[in-house]
Length: 176
Image (tube, rainbow, N blue to C red; front, side, top):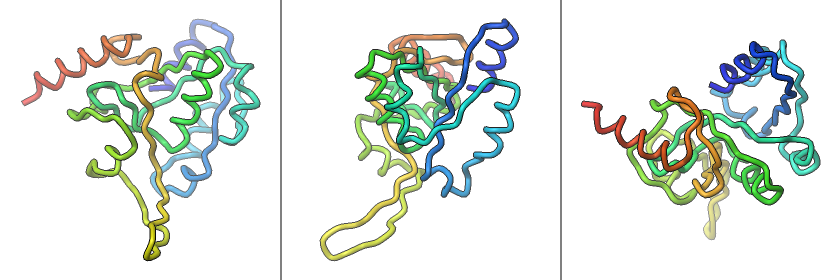
């Protein structure tokens, strides 16, 4: 979805530059297609930075565009670990956070925190080490609150969080 949006801007000859945030945890995830993402950016003006460098470049950007692994019906975002921190930085600096998400990625569940992710089937949380006192977890996903999201781009276009939530609810109601 993100690549489609970027190619659309490029076809309209809109000038823009992409800053691609590389995640250390994502690169450990065997399902993550890092090189594929970079190959798709080849025709664009882009720069790759680590997630730790986001704070250093945030003032250079107009908006943040991220994809979605999954969204809840209340538009809580489940995405690669680090997305929630980027959303907080964007909020602090007054930058718009735009999510690209197709309706098939919505789940019929209301989520409010990272705890809701851990309880959802199919989301990978790996116990790296366990002691009698605690567990050391390696998480691949985090939760971004709907309050940090400014816009959601779907098959229907750019929608507010409220509009997206309404459309997702209607879409799920129509499914058998």
